[in-house]
Image (tube, rainbow, N blue to C red):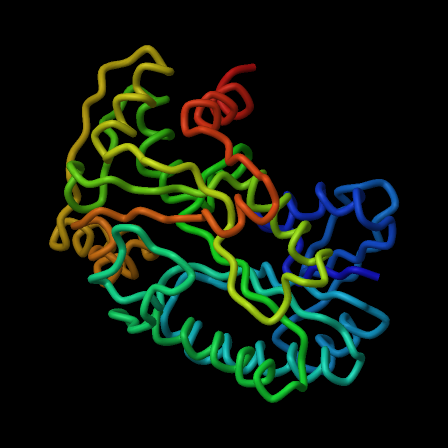
Length: 310
Protein backbone atom coordinates (compact mmCIF):
# COMPACT_ATOMS: atom_id res chain seq x y z
CA UNK A 1 0.00 0.00 0.00
CA UNK A 2 1.29 3.48 -0.94
CA UNK A 3 -0.48 6.22 0.99
CA UNK A 4 -0.75 9.95 0.28
CA UNK A 5 -1.42 12.14 3.31
CA UNK A 6 -3.03 15.32 2.02
CA UNK A 7 -4.18 13.74 -1.21
CA UNK A 8 -6.53 16.47 -2.43
CA UNK A 9 -4.00 19.23 -3.07
CA UNK A 10 -2.21 20.19 -6.27
CA UNK A 11 0.76 17.88 -5.68
CA UNK A 12 -1.23 15.04 -4.13
CA UNK A 13 -3.48 14.80 -7.18
CA UNK A 14 -0.57 14.77 -9.64
CA UNK A 15 1.25 12.20 -7.51
CA UNK A 16 -1.84 9.98 -7.45
CA UNK A 17 -2.02 10.19 -11.25
CA UNK A 18 1.59 9.01 -11.49
CA UNK A 19 1.52 6.13 -8.99
CA UNK A 20 -0.36 3.47 -11.04
CA UNK A 21 2.88 2.99 -12.99
CA UNK A 22 4.28 1.47 -9.77
CA UNK A 23 1.31 0.13 -7.79
CA UNK A 24 -2.43 -0.41 -7.95
CA UNK A 25 -2.69 -0.29 -4.17
CA UNK A 26 -3.09 3.43 -3.46
CA UNK A 27 -4.68 5.04 -0.42
CA UNK A 28 -5.75 8.71 -0.57
CA UNK A 29 -6.12 10.40 2.81
CA UNK A 30 -7.59 13.84 3.53
CA UNK A 31 -10.60 15.53 5.11
CA UNK A 32 -12.60 15.18 1.89
CA UNK A 33 -10.85 12.59 -0.27
CA UNK A 34 -11.93 11.80 -3.81
CA UNK A 35 -10.62 9.07 -6.10
CA UNK A 36 -8.10 10.05 -8.77
CA UNK A 37 -7.80 6.52 -10.17
CA UNK A 38 -10.74 4.11 -10.24
CA UNK A 39 -9.08 1.63 -7.89
CA UNK A 40 -7.98 4.10 -5.23
CA UNK A 41 -8.89 3.50 -1.59
CA UNK A 42 -10.07 6.69 0.10
CA UNK A 43 -9.92 7.46 3.80
CA UNK A 44 -11.58 10.47 5.39
CA UNK A 45 -9.29 11.54 8.21
CA UNK A 46 -8.40 14.46 10.47
CA UNK A 47 -4.62 14.46 10.06
CA UNK A 48 -4.16 16.72 13.06
CA UNK A 49 -5.19 13.79 15.26
CA UNK A 50 -2.19 11.47 15.92
CA UNK A 51 -4.48 8.46 16.33
CA UNK A 52 -5.99 9.16 12.91
CA UNK A 53 -2.52 9.53 11.41
CA UNK A 54 -1.58 6.15 12.83
CA UNK A 55 -4.73 4.65 11.33
CA UNK A 56 -3.93 6.19 7.95
CA UNK A 57 -0.35 4.90 7.92
CA UNK A 58 -1.16 1.38 9.15
CA UNK A 59 -0.70 -1.18 6.38
CA UNK A 60 1.40 1.18 4.24
CA UNK A 61 4.83 0.36 2.89
CA UNK A 62 5.34 3.93 1.70
CA UNK A 63 3.84 7.21 2.90
CA UNK A 64 3.91 10.51 1.02
CA UNK A 65 3.29 13.78 2.87
CA UNK A 66 1.87 16.35 0.44
CA UNK A 67 -0.53 18.09 2.79
CA UNK A 68 -0.94 21.86 2.49
CA UNK A 69 -1.93 23.40 5.80
CA UNK A 70 -3.53 26.88 5.92
CA UNK A 71 -0.93 29.50 4.98
CA UNK A 72 -0.55 30.99 8.43
CA UNK A 73 2.59 31.10 10.59
CA UNK A 74 0.50 30.77 13.75
CA UNK A 75 -1.17 27.63 12.38
CA UNK A 76 2.12 26.23 11.05
CA UNK A 77 3.95 26.72 14.34
CA UNK A 78 1.18 25.06 16.33
CA UNK A 79 0.50 22.15 13.99
CA UNK A 80 3.26 21.28 11.49
CA UNK A 81 5.85 19.89 13.97
CA UNK A 82 3.21 18.01 15.93
CA UNK A 83 1.79 16.51 12.73
CA UNK A 84 5.23 15.52 11.42
CA UNK A 85 6.11 13.90 14.73
CA UNK A 86 2.97 11.78 14.53
CA UNK A 87 3.76 10.78 10.92
CA UNK A 88 7.32 9.80 11.81
CA UNK A 89 6.15 7.79 14.81
CA UNK A 90 3.53 6.00 12.72
CA UNK A 91 6.00 5.22 9.94
CA UNK A 92 8.46 3.80 12.45
CA UNK A 93 5.75 1.74 14.14
CA UNK A 94 4.40 0.30 10.89
CA UNK A 95 7.78 0.07 9.11
CA UNK A 96 6.80 2.42 6.31
CA UNK A 97 9.16 4.58 4.25
CA UNK A 98 8.49 8.34 4.21
CA UNK A 99 8.60 10.86 1.36
CA UNK A 100 8.16 14.50 2.37
CA UNK A 101 7.21 17.03 -0.31
CA UNK A 102 9.02 20.19 0.78
CA UNK A 103 9.70 23.78 -0.31
CA UNK A 104 12.75 26.08 -0.18
CA UNK A 105 11.75 28.34 2.71
CA UNK A 106 14.63 27.14 4.92
CA UNK A 107 17.35 28.18 2.45
CA UNK A 108 19.65 31.14 3.15
CA UNK A 109 18.26 34.19 1.35
CA UNK A 110 21.74 35.03 0.03
CA UNK A 111 21.96 31.73 -1.87
CA UNK A 112 18.76 31.70 -3.93
CA UNK A 113 20.43 32.29 -7.32
CA UNK A 114 21.25 28.69 -8.24
CA UNK A 115 19.74 26.69 -5.39
CA UNK A 116 20.93 23.07 -5.12
CA UNK A 117 20.52 20.34 -2.53
CA UNK A 118 23.64 21.75 -0.83
CA UNK A 119 22.30 25.29 -0.41
CA UNK A 120 22.87 26.44 3.19
CA UNK A 121 19.93 26.12 5.58
CA UNK A 122 19.48 29.45 7.31
CA UNK A 123 15.78 30.39 7.22
CA UNK A 124 15.15 34.16 7.01
CA UNK A 125 11.44 33.91 7.82
CA UNK A 126 9.31 32.48 10.62
CA UNK A 127 7.67 30.06 8.19
CA UNK A 128 11.12 29.00 7.02
CA UNK A 129 12.09 28.22 10.61
CA UNK A 130 9.12 25.87 10.87
CA UNK A 131 10.10 24.13 7.63
CA UNK A 132 13.68 23.71 8.83
CA UNK A 133 12.36 22.13 12.03
CA UNK A 134 10.40 19.57 10.02
CA UNK A 135 13.43 18.59 7.96
CA UNK A 136 15.51 18.19 11.12
CA UNK A 137 12.88 15.93 12.67
CA UNK A 138 13.05 13.64 9.63
CA UNK A 139 16.80 13.67 9.03
CA UNK A 140 17.63 13.11 12.69
CA UNK A 141 15.69 9.84 12.47
CA UNK A 142 17.42 8.98 9.19
CA UNK A 143 20.85 9.58 10.72
CA UNK A 144 19.92 7.46 13.72
CA UNK A 145 18.93 4.61 11.40
CA UNK A 146 15.37 4.54 12.73
CA UNK A 147 13.60 5.75 9.56
CA UNK A 148 14.00 5.46 5.79
CA UNK A 149 12.95 8.76 4.28
CA UNK A 150 13.69 11.32 1.60
CA UNK A 151 12.98 15.00 1.04
CA UNK A 152 11.49 15.93 -2.36
CA UNK A 153 11.87 19.68 -2.67
CA UNK A 154 10.23 22.03 -5.19
CA UNK A 155 10.40 25.70 -6.04
CA UNK A 156 7.22 27.76 -6.12
CA UNK A 157 4.89 25.78 -8.34
CA UNK A 158 2.49 26.33 -11.20
CA UNK A 159 0.30 23.98 -13.19
CA UNK A 160 -3.16 23.21 -14.56
CA UNK A 161 -6.18 23.03 -12.29
CA UNK A 162 -4.74 24.83 -9.25
CA UNK A 163 -6.33 28.26 -9.40
CA UNK A 164 -6.64 28.65 -5.64
CA UNK A 165 -3.24 27.35 -4.52
CA UNK A 166 -0.76 28.93 -6.93
CA UNK A 167 0.46 32.46 -6.26
CA UNK A 168 1.41 32.77 -9.94
CA UNK A 169 -2.10 31.85 -11.03
CA UNK A 170 -3.75 34.21 -8.56
CA UNK A 171 -1.51 37.22 -9.19
CA UNK A 172 -0.74 36.89 -12.90
CA UNK A 173 -2.91 34.50 -14.89
CA UNK A 174 -6.26 35.20 -13.26
CA UNK A 175 -6.15 39.03 -13.52
CA UNK A 176 -4.75 38.98 -17.07
CA UNK A 177 -7.48 36.54 -18.15
CA UNK A 178 -10.03 39.07 -16.84
CA UNK A 179 -8.45 41.99 -18.66
CA UNK A 180 -6.93 43.43 -15.46
CA UNK A 181 -3.39 44.30 -14.43
CA UNK A 182 -1.18 41.50 -13.22
CA UNK A 183 0.44 41.84 -9.80
CA UNK A 184 4.05 40.80 -9.26
CA UNK A 185 5.41 40.53 -5.76
CA UNK A 186 8.60 42.56 -5.43
CA UNK A 187 10.64 43.59 -8.44
CA UNK A 188 9.73 42.13 -11.83
CA UNK A 189 13.28 42.41 -13.14
CA UNK A 190 14.47 39.29 -11.32
CA UNK A 191 14.38 35.69 -12.57
CA UNK A 192 11.94 33.34 -10.84
CA UNK A 193 11.75 29.55 -11.16
CA UNK A 194 8.48 27.65 -10.98
CA UNK A 195 8.15 23.85 -10.75
CA UNK A 196 5.46 22.39 -13.02
CA UNK A 197 3.07 20.33 -10.90
CA UNK A 198 2.67 17.35 -13.29
CA UNK A 199 6.49 17.05 -13.36
CA UNK A 200 6.58 17.27 -9.56
CA UNK A 201 4.00 14.49 -9.21
CA UNK A 202 5.79 12.17 -11.63
CA UNK A 203 9.17 12.84 -10.04
CA UNK A 204 7.92 12.29 -6.50
CA UNK A 205 6.52 8.92 -7.57
CA UNK A 206 9.85 8.01 -9.17
CA UNK A 207 11.75 8.89 -6.00
CA UNK A 208 9.37 7.03 -3.72
CA UNK A 209 9.76 3.90 -5.80
CA UNK A 210 13.55 4.05 -6.18
CA UNK A 211 15.29 2.29 -3.31
CA UNK A 212 18.59 4.14 -3.80
CA UNK A 213 16.90 7.57 -3.58
CA UNK A 214 16.29 7.36 0.17
CA UNK A 215 18.03 9.12 3.04
CA UNK A 216 18.83 12.23 1.02
CA UNK A 217 17.38 15.45 -0.39
CA UNK A 218 16.25 15.81 -4.02
CA UNK A 219 15.26 18.88 -6.00
CA UNK A 220 12.32 18.03 -8.22
CA UNK A 221 12.72 18.66 -11.98
CA UNK A 222 12.33 22.34 -12.81
CA UNK A 223 13.14 24.02 -16.12
CA UNK A 224 16.36 26.03 -16.14
CA UNK A 225 16.99 29.65 -17.13
CA UNK A 226 13.69 30.96 -15.73
CA UNK A 227 12.05 34.13 -17.06
CA UNK A 228 12.05 37.35 -15.08
CA UNK A 229 8.77 38.48 -13.55
CA UNK A 230 8.32 40.88 -16.46
CA UNK A 231 8.94 38.09 -18.96
CA UNK A 232 6.47 35.80 -17.15
CA UNK A 233 3.83 38.51 -17.46
CA UNK A 234 4.64 39.18 -21.12
CA UNK A 235 4.45 35.45 -21.97
CA UNK A 236 1.11 35.15 -20.17
CA UNK A 237 -0.37 38.29 -21.72
CA UNK A 238 0.63 37.15 -25.19
CA UNK A 239 -1.12 33.82 -24.64
CA UNK A 240 -4.31 35.65 -23.62
CA UNK A 241 -4.00 38.22 -26.39
CA UNK A 242 -3.96 41.17 -23.97
CA UNK A 243 -1.50 43.91 -23.05
CA UNK A 244 1.17 42.95 -20.48
CA UNK A 245 0.18 45.53 -17.91
CA UNK A 246 1.22 44.97 -14.30
CA UNK A 247 2.09 46.54 -10.99
CA UNK A 248 4.86 45.61 -8.59
CA UNK A 249 3.53 44.85 -5.12
CA UNK A 250 5.67 46.39 -2.39
CA UNK A 251 5.68 45.29 1.25
CA UNK A 252 3.42 48.21 2.19
CA UNK A 253 1.00 47.32 -0.62
CA UNK A 254 0.86 43.70 0.53
CA UNK A 255 0.05 44.83 4.06
CA UNK A 256 -2.72 47.04 2.69
CA UNK A 257 -4.16 44.22 0.58
CA UNK A 258 -3.95 42.00 3.65
CA UNK A 259 -6.61 44.11 5.35
CA UNK A 260 -9.10 42.71 2.84
CA UNK A 261 -7.43 39.43 1.81
CA UNK A 262 -6.22 37.57 4.93
CA UNK A 263 -3.72 35.28 3.16
CA UNK A 264 -1.82 38.33 1.90
CA UNK A 265 -1.02 39.28 5.50
CA UNK A 266 1.35 36.32 5.45
CA UNK A 267 3.28 37.46 2.37
CA UNK A 268 5.45 40.44 3.46
CA UNK A 269 7.98 38.21 5.23
CA UNK A 270 8.34 36.15 2.05
CA UNK A 271 9.00 39.15 -0.19
CA UNK A 272 12.76 38.49 -0.05
CA UNK A 273 12.18 35.69 -2.59
CA UNK A 274 11.13 38.32 -5.13
CA UNK A 275 13.77 41.02 -4.61
CA UNK A 276 16.58 38.90 -6.07
CA UNK A 277 17.04 36.10 -8.61
CA UNK A 278 15.26 32.93 -7.48
CA UNK A 279 16.77 30.15 -9.57
CA UNK A 280 16.19 26.50 -8.70
CA UNK A 281 18.60 23.82 -9.93
CA UNK A 282 17.44 20.21 -10.42
CA UNK A 283 20.47 18.76 -12.21
CA UNK A 284 20.85 15.97 -9.65
CA UNK A 285 17.41 14.52 -10.39
CA UNK A 286 17.54 15.15 -14.14
CA UNK A 287 20.86 13.35 -14.49
CA UNK A 288 19.97 10.47 -12.17
CA UNK A 289 16.67 9.71 -13.89
CA UNK A 290 17.21 11.08 -17.41
CA UNK A 291 14.23 13.39 -16.91
CA UNK A 292 13.70 16.59 -18.91
CA UNK A 293 11.46 19.15 -17.16
CA UNK A 294 8.55 20.69 -19.03
CA UNK A 295 9.57 24.00 -20.59
CA UNK A 296 7.99 27.16 -19.21
CA UNK A 297 6.41 27.85 -22.59
CA UNK A 298 4.79 24.41 -22.77
CA UNK A 299 3.71 24.53 -19.12
CA UNK A 300 2.05 27.90 -19.56
CA UNK A 301 0.33 26.74 -22.75
CA UNK A 302 -1.07 23.67 -20.98
CA UNK A 303 -2.43 25.74 -18.08
CA UNK A 304 -4.21 28.17 -20.36
CA UNK A 305 -5.63 25.40 -22.55
CA UNK A 306 -6.83 23.47 -19.50
CA UNK A 307 -8.11 26.28 -17.28
CA UNK A 308 -9.07 29.20 -19.50
CA UNK A 309 -10.34 27.81 -22.81
CA UNK A 310 -13.52 25.79 -23.10
